[in-house]
Image (cartoon, rainbow, N blue to C red; front, side):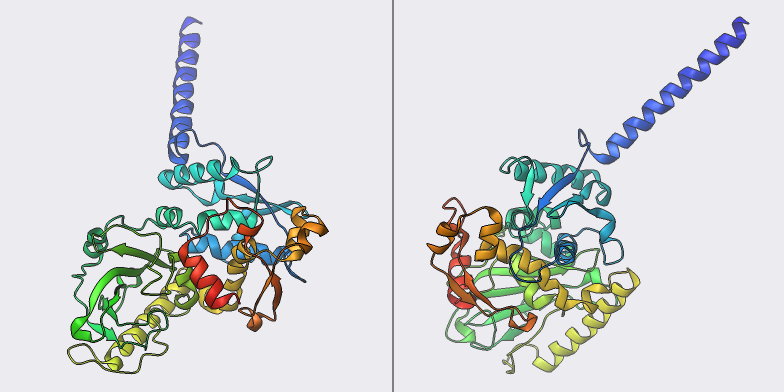
Length: 380
């Protein structure tokens, strides 16, 4: 009888120890002290016919842009509408890497600390993750130093192709590129682009370096470095309208490196035809990669990526409809000065009345890039 009890006790001790180890292992995988990465997001309709599905699809693109393994077949597994206008985003089950869980935990804690009842405006959630450059860099794991980025891709920062002055859609001056010559692997494709000053190519003086490569989910990743090799929150508005990394998606979601206006060849640099040939091959590499990794929607649903833009755009520039939804009175709404936006006409959306959030919330940060580019170029 004593032997039986001893054996049973031994079994229980072993089982308890195994259970403890399993719990420790599970907690270790999820990150120290991280029990829940769910966040409640409040939707404030901003324009006619905006739907809950539009919000879901917009969040799909945002999470994808931030490097998460999410696609059009699984995104609804991580989104649940708890109320007609409150969506529960389940990052807890989407993110498994310990370091990323800890990062997301810190981000969510910070965002929720400035919200009522831990319910966060969905537009603000997007703005504080995708549109806040320092957070974007962390989530996309962009190298903190230019030297690290160059070493990662075997680049030498030697410029091979130059876009002539006046032929870039983002820079009034010359723009000098370097690219990896990858023929088969998407994750080996990388670019640098120097922006600067100079009336002639011989007088060109670089002022900053913009970079682009690809994440494991097939989405592009962007960064801006100063000449000392440190990350910048965005490009210098005095030499380019490229803006902060989040804005680069507008041109680069569909193509590796589009040449929209560039037509000239510059002596001493690769020809345009040669550069375009490289780009075409890299675009084929990307298409194959996306289809092999179940990320077809990045190419097949490009129009839908605007739903991601609209989430942060209508938060930064709310409409009267959104302001009323947020709880502002009719009197407050009528007292504001509005401007028109025609950027989304291709989406059958014309915003007759928009106001910068700074007008209703003086604590809202305005960057020089958002003031110069968003308002002076696109928003009026």
